[in-house]
Length: 398
Image 1: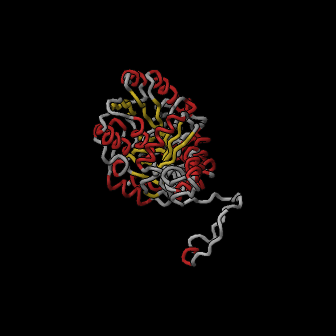
Image 2 (image 1 turned 90 degrees about the vertical axis):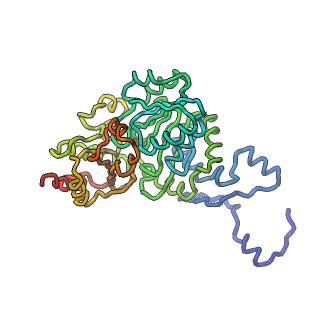
Image 3 (image 1 turned 30 degrees about the horizontal axis):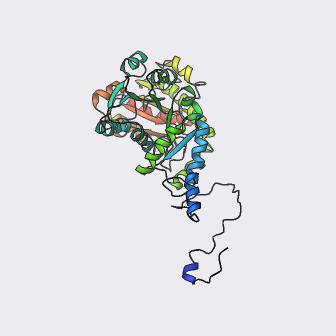
């Protein structure tokens, strides 16, 4: 018990009003923006560290813990790390698990900035990298090596929706004692749970569908193994890629409507893709719900039904710069934004954004042309979206 002391007003300003003794159960989750948590004597300090309690914001934070637990539940994982962005989640995992001389096997159909990160960071780290078409499992088996540390893919590629057989790839990886790392951003745990199919690490850009409101930048790493978690956690802490409490709070708020939002977005994408596939001026449409989708058998294997796949699609228009501009200017609902997963429908041109730096020969392998437009469907009425795209495409009739 401390003896009472009368301090000055200037000092008391710093301490009055602090009474956290009452046990509260707020209806809405609070935000813990504090950079540090107070501890008592050295015994209490040691106990807090031993129990991996809350000490410093970069190490642990209650908001990140709450969101991580919820994502672990959704992904059927054991533990989840919350990072400052989707790219932070990807690169932090690379830095934590890869060493010079390791082999990294990656799907040639991946997000453009992931492609850049691999070519810039991993090659500087003297990691041996091979790009392979993961739709060809025989090629994957030939490419994997005894020193392969990670096999990496997205469930559905950005922006062409090419699918990866997660279970089969995980078997190939595990035969060589490699880790299977999967980006689930395009599909979300509502559509598929890669850890249940054999993956070891699942990445999500929480900025996208999981948040859903285009107002927070965050990423996650979900694993099934405590040792893997601890290894990545140490590097996340040292590299400073932990997510901010406010962004985490926003995503935690947004994730509670994930099921409601994403199911409608996925259905909207399937319906819009089906309409666009029948349009005489559209050269090609990419979405796994289509009957002529090249990997239809795999799509049926991976997903519950055609309306529970992904809210993302892409379609190829004639390579006519002025007509593409005219099409974009005629849209009323859909608007250009270099992001995805929000409640409003957006479009993005890969060659001006996500795949700007990708070499032409790699773009060809990925099926990305100048006329390709990526669409992230929102929660608008599907008939309204279809009508808007249909009327805007009439510019190609002129």
